Amino acid sequence: MTPKHPHVTVHLTERDGNAFAILGRCRRAAEIAQLPEEEIERFLTEAMAGDYDHLVQTATRWFEIT
Image (cartoon, rainbow, N blue to C red; front, side):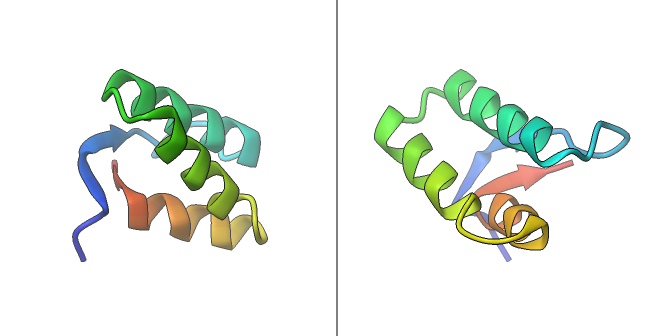
């Protein structure tokens, strides 16, 4: 499955798996890729709408995860 923004790469392996750390890395990668702030906010809203598994699945649907 191709993520919504395949040009945005988020490095999650061998990193802190804390939900806040994941959100921060996703936000930073999106900012570096110059996604509009509205799109970043849509991601954050969707990612925080469920549990930890939902967060990880949302990140995978939106970005290239390594």
